[in-house]
Amino acid sequence: MNSSNITNNPSFLASIGLAGGTGVLIVNVTHPIDVIKTRMQIKKGFSIHQMIKSEGFFSLYRGLPVTWLREASYTSIKLGAYGPIRDVICNKDGPTPFHLKFISGSLSGGIGSCFGNPFDVIKTMQMAGEKKSISEIVKQMLEKQGVYGFSRGLQANIARGVVLNGTKMACYDEAKNFVTKSTGFDRNDIRCQFLSAGIAGFFMACTVTPIDMMKTRLMNQPINEIHYNGLIDCFTKVLTKEGPFAFYRGFLPIWGRFAPQATLQLVVFEQLLKFTKYNPI
Image (cartoon, rainbow, N blue to C red; front, side, top):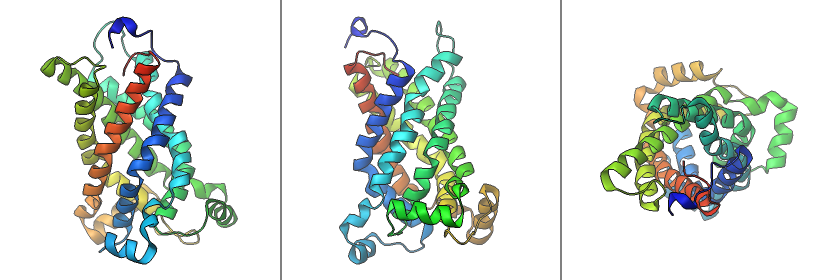
C-alpha cells in the first residue's frame, strides 16, 4: 500500500485494541510451546512424551482461557502502546535513535506486565500442572494470601516485560530500517515485516530467557509455601544450587515460541494497521 493511502497514526485506544485482538488470536498457535517451556523450567528431566502419555494431548493447552485474558491485558499495552509512547518522547522530524525505541518498548512492556500479572500467575500455575479451575485458584489464593498473592513474581515480570519488549520493539523497528535499505522493501511490505520480526525474535530469546526462568519459579510456588523471597533471592538460590546454565533452561522452546510469536504478532498487528489505514510501526 502506498503512503498516500495511509491516513495517520492510530489513537491510543485504537492501537491497544488492535494489539489486544492480535495477541488473543496468535496465542492459540503458540500456547503449547509455552506450556512445554514452563514445564522444562520447573521440572528437571521433563519429557513431552511422558506428559502427553500421563495427562493427555490437551495438557498442551492447559491454561489457555486465562492466557486469553492475559493477552487482552498485557499484549494490548506492550504492543499497542509502543507507537504512541515512541511518538510522544521522540523527535518526529528526524530518525528515532535506538535507545529511545528501547525506552519506549520498555515502558509499554513494564506497564503491560503490571496489568497482566494476576492472569500470568494463574496461567503459570495451570501450565505447571495445577488442575484447579480459574475460579478455584482465585478463591484459594484469596483465602491463603489475599490480593497480594496475585502480585507474586511481579518484580520478575516487570523486569521481563521491560527487557523483552524493549528488545522486541527496538530491534524490530531498527531491523525494518535495515531491511528496507538492504532490499528496497517498503516498511509496510509484509516481506519486510516477516524478516524484521524474525530478527527481533532471536534477540528477544537471548536477553529474556534468564528473567523468564526466574519469573516462572516465583509464580509457580505453592500457595501455602514460599521458596523464594523475590527476584534477588531467586537469582541467588538458583545460581548457588543449580549453576549459571540453569538460567538458560528452556532456551530452545523460548526461542521456538518467540520466533513465531513475535513474527505472527508483529505481522498481524501491522496488517491490521494497514487494513484500517493507519501508519505502520
